Amino acid sequence: MSARFRLSAAAAIGLLSPAAHAARPAPIEVAMTIDDAPMHAPFPPGESIASVNRALIAALARGGVREVTLFVNGIGTERSSEGRAALEAWRRAGVRFGNHTWTHGNIDEVGVAAFEADIAKGEPLLAELGGTGDEHWLRFPYLAEGKDAATRGAVRGWLADRRYRIAAVSLSFGDWQWTGPLARCAAQGNRAALAELDRRYLAAAADEIARARRQDRLSGHPFPRVLLMHDSAMTARMMPRLLALYRRLGVRWIGLARAERDPAYASDVDPRRAPAERHWLDRPADLPPRDDGGALNAICPAPAAAG
Ligand SMILES: [Zn+2]
Image 1 (cartoon, rainbow, N blue to C red):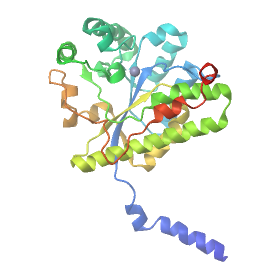
Image 2: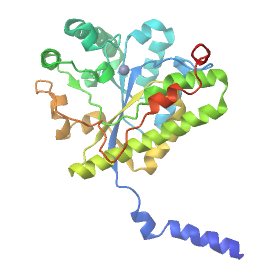
Image 3: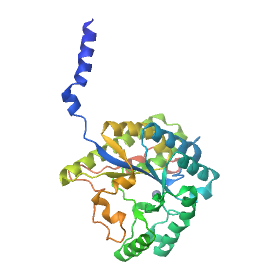
């Protein structure tokens, strides 16, 4: 046995020692939710609704994420014939569907009546896709629940009457911010910039798990997280690496309904209650805010904006 071999064997044994094992992070339970199905555009050259959704479905299956809730904007089935086919592929893969309104309107811009009509317009499509009861989860577009108490109260009463539950978001690293930069960098064939996008994406995801753990330690009350992702080419590109990262960080996948059984989500599960005063997406003071949006917008600027 060479000295070199003995060294690497010792190093390997060290990796398996009880001390190293104890350093493995404690599990953190997370529910996977994906918004803006069947498409969060734009797409890079060569990608399509079909290819993006196919890649996402395959990556989630390979990564062992057994329960996924997909929030649908029905308008995506009007814009392309691939939209409906993509949703059918998700159905065959066993996804649960939720309502994200038909057009992705913002309640504070369209008003309560139009917003409610936009939710109702999505119901027949979700029923056709195979209602499980889960389609009565609502994810508010832009996470806007109403700018004042009157708006919030009105829509929550309507949701309660129709047996909706609100799909909270308690974990997000702003994956949607990569959608445009990926399309630009890919169109320009800028490989260095693409690598930088990938690096930043994974760093942001890891940072938000650290923030969740920090919040749990500060509060003394760990609770399951509901992760917000988007049906985009960037998230399809990164999902295998993202799931591997999350595995290393101790993420254990659970379903949305199980996550929201935690008392932290009581006012989401029952919209008759007043909205929670919560700050799940705020950062503790000792974790500085990320600014991926500003940095990402500067990567691969569009030619018109670069001049
Ligand atoms: Zn959305």
